[in-house]
Length: 356
Ligand code: KG4
Ligand code: ZN
Image (cartoon, rainbow, N blue to C red):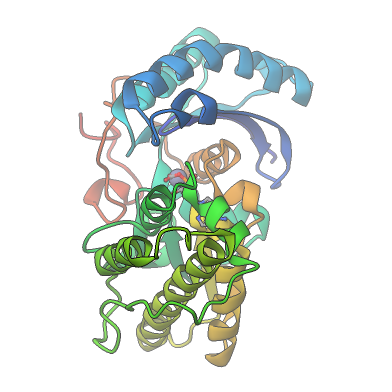
């Protein structure tokens, strides 16, 4: 049986719609990135984001259905990110999905955005459970064991900034604009990663938690210490390379600890999966690929366009839950916070769906 899902993503600054089937085919996807709307503010402004989602979402749905060449009758379910995220945007997407579900008489699935990132490698690579997941985005930084749909065991989280946030803030103090990740990765390619000695917070302490505050402060101090006139292109490239190398070291060490814990709990760790916007970074991927290989694990990284926020992953997470028998009530509330290891992530969700 092949099911077809329409997925909506509006939790941050991408308005995205996708049509995906349960045979892992992305029939069509459309995405409007709000970069221009937020650029002058140096970060995402929630109110502007919500308004932009509102004006873009409907045309994107029409375009996606047209591109996929499917009518509403062929759609089996409608999935939307229902949290966590910027609540104004989440409300726009979830309400649109509920309205379509009512009007078209289709099931509605409330998708957790983090679960959508967590399951992306099953869409892109058909990854089998269980696997170790490094989820690194603008809002989240976590290592977790994914034992099955809804069965997530958090090994460690960030104690301060998310990794994407550290990239974005570092880029801001260097005057590189928003979002910082791609700009830093580009500059780092021609930089000397040994020029600036930057800290690796929590190094040698064991466990799987992260901390990036000290690293971020050290970058700011390095920028301030550069003599006037020396903040040239090469200095910026060297600083980016040094920052990225520090991030790679931190991730590699934390993943090493997590692989060992995963192996102790599940027998062995065959797959390390990297997901979330920062997983688009090719240098970090390479480092983690080497690290995983040393412990007999294979790194799986979805294509960059499926790592950053997109609706194909939301449609896919909806399909996984739909096939597991889940249906959500139309009155579930959008949520600004929604942890992956909470009771309401387990399957089956109670008959009433999410607690409201
Ligand atoms: O998953 P995502 O699109 O949105 C959230 O759910 O947060 O992640 C966005 C984050 C931003 O912080 C951005 O700077 C970072 O991912 N990012 C990158 C790269 N591309 C995006 N960070 C490092 N290197 C990249 N190439
Ligand atoms: Zn995300």
